Length: 219
Image (cartoon, rainbow, N blue to C red):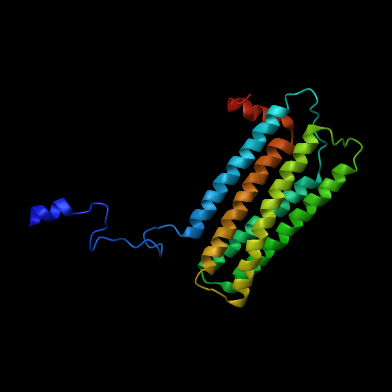
């Protein structure tokens, strides 16, 4: 009987007592939200990397003229740094169960983030009013493209930030709030790093971008 049972057994069918329940996510050590954010950040990293390489390749053509330098970008960078610091403060506070401090950190992070976006819009207008402004200059086109794309990612993060801040302030969904604050902080730090790279390589001097691309073997 045992031999006959082995012949008729269906190997693709799950065996009694060995079925692993996956629907509740218990088989994964990483929460689905965390995994989703990691995948999204990886995609965004590739996107901005391709834009930087495209900017470096376009720079080699004769019609490329460096865009005018904007001192306002330094202030905007400081605003984004402060926003990231405030988010980290909220992250630490929520881990300690300090809801009031976490709320203050979230509000501060959002305030400085909006200040950064407002400063970027003002920088666009400032560049537009300069005598050296020429929309046919590819350097200026890349400036608008990259800063707008980064701003859109920050704006999308502010949507999640608003929902998270409301939950913390009103005590809603307290079980998942710590993870939401954690992911907001991680996203803010990521956008800060991306902006520092863009600012340092694209806006503080085109020679820096050329040197980096040469080191990477792209140019």
